[in-house]
Image (tube, rainbow, N blue to C red; front, side, top):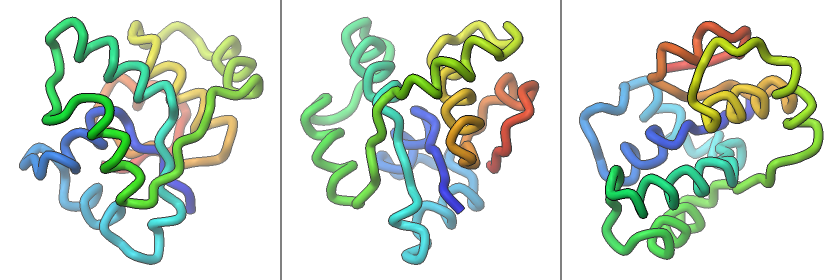
Length: 129
């Protein structure tokens, strides 16, 4: 199974936050799934925007975030045409454009989204928390 990490999931894991659920932590730490942990470039884009607005902080900023993602051997996937096509078919149930794109990506690529965001659950996307 492939898992797509939501932006907050990435940051909470890398910051050892207590906000991360036990199930999410287990999925991420499971050595058998390390090749199956995926992050969308949309999450990096979201981080950059929120970091520049002062809404998110991460020691070392974007460069360090990328280093830590690589150190964990997580795949960073681009935004594909198929993701945008799926996004155009999603009902407008969630106002956050990044979360909508992550939902479309998970649906398009057959992944399970690892998220604490209850609003995403309104889509028919497989998720765990």
